[in-house]
Image 1 (cartoon, helix red, strand yellow):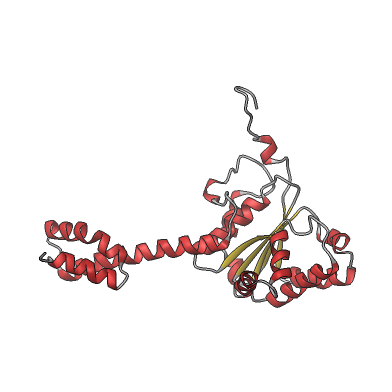
Image 2: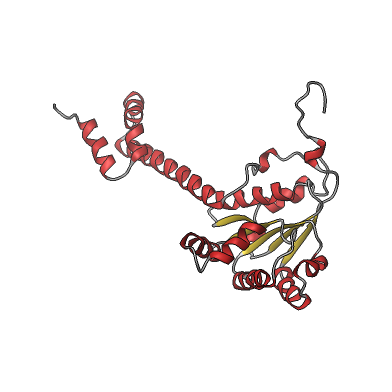
Length: 253
């Protein structure tokens, strides 16, 4: 079987792992022939396809690593539901200037006011702009800290956290933690201090954290590092989930 030049180029693309270039070769060449595109323009068109594909795959990979919850698209944010955060403030947060300056953000308020959704959305925005960002519930983070010296996957996850630009800790201090876990959390925050930004969601004020940790000295030291460069955003209002809850019955909220 005689191999055409197009087949040969596609084979070479496969050898060089240029999958998008190979997939779009026929279409781009056909359009180039119709539009009388120059050789340099043709090469650029093919390179643009490959670069766009690689950026898309890279974003997909990094988004998967971030372990985001299901809802994180802040473009769909419902400003009609009042929680104390207006459109201007959210847009300013989405610019991520605070992340570039190693600031922390605490989203504080009762359940259902959008803390997790906003945190996850900002985490995705960071990933989308090329930052290494990870989303962890307090429970997941404590598990990593417990297992990092025992299980390889936890050790790898811990190293990723240490190298991150942003770490989201969701529902911090919701449940009591052991003294050992509290110390491990402090050691992590201390390690990340002034190198990695934090987004923390909580339904407790910083003053109430000592009740969970049962150690005022440790709580003071932990808060000292978190609040040094930090914006505290207090959310309020009714629960969005309860106001928009689903039902199995027709014509009934």
